[in-house]
Image (cartoon, rainbow, N blue to C red; front, side, top):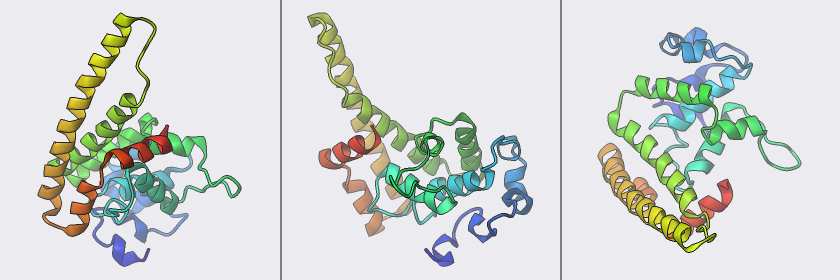
Length: 205
């Protein structure tokens, strides 16, 4: 990707050379302890990832051909996280970031969303994550230890399914509100089908 595709980022971290401190240039991020006191040595990579994966103008966010996890993986690779040359996989620590299992990085994401200051975008990022978490739960087998547990499990799944459908409806509206009638984002909205959900789940489980 060339610099033009990153030109609309709220914080243009792509303009900082590798090896230079991103926070030294962007005091808007340095004001947050979540950024300035991040304890690990990969801070620059993490900051780039947060911007690439959570800025609504990021080319990775706008890539309508990729699902949520694939967008984050592409953002992580561009940010500087490397894949194993033999397996093609990231380190476990990188996957913990991608899957939102790293509390320090999650806190950085929340701070960056404050910088973006777009409530519609915040709602999209929150609901999209919740949508896939519900999907993962729905793909777990029903408990069949006894009839009572089976009925309880089925009832919970029924409620989750209804909630997930409501989330999907909300996401449709939020994307249209943020991006209008852009054809690429209409495709992004419409591509969530049972088949793509299955593919997504099998990739992240």
